[in-house]
Length: 350
Image (cartoon, rainbow, N blue to C red; front, side, top):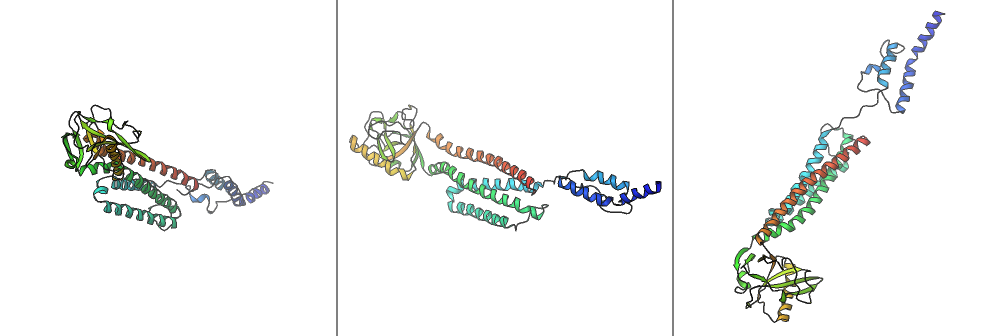
């Protein structure tokens, strides 16, 4: 009986390899597999391995462990964060400041060369032909490269839009920097022809707006003007005018534009918008006809308390806006990379 029992047990153990494979296949269905970091003898047949107690013990150690997570490669994460952000900073700075004003052709060429490079990277990424991320398997590269190329394109578009918008502020500072500054100007003694190159004018204390002779010209918007006078003296020619948009009714003397009733305001910033200058000139012509006054060479100004400080603030605001966007876009790019890393890890492409 003992001999028969021993023979039956050895026969059952001899078929353990088939049982092992069946159990392993079943476990794989439920997401478990042999631990790939365990020694390979748990899967490879060796003399005396199968049909023994050692086989059962080795099998039980490896088969119940879930698959290990793949390690994250941080090279794509760093590149996909810093390079698009650096492109954003470069394009934004080129479009916002001095080089755009003094060398517009060189600036535009540089910006669009960067766009061509981005498009080339995007094409190569989509076709899966670009492979430079060291340590990343070839089948995983296209996912990061497509993301990298798309964020480069997004960075260029955002920088182009915001940089050009910021330049509309800083360009006014550069425009006025090309003109002269005048102080102690008496509007009742001087003529517009004497200050044709004026950018910033500080009128003599006591200068004010004559709201009673203001006028407005409507062309979609209301272009409002009011003469700058000194005291009650009547000038030979009303050549200095404060201007504003949509701050009067147009049919009566009710100029209420910036600083119109501020007693500390006595300075002017020259109007540099050539597109609107013609409409302000028409408003002056209406005032000439209405009040029977003369304006031989009218110059237009924004009425300010401290015009020099105001102009300097435009450049300062441009730099502050640039710094805010630089930091904000870095945070935004980090967010995009984090989302991409999570998504790629879920689909097995990280």
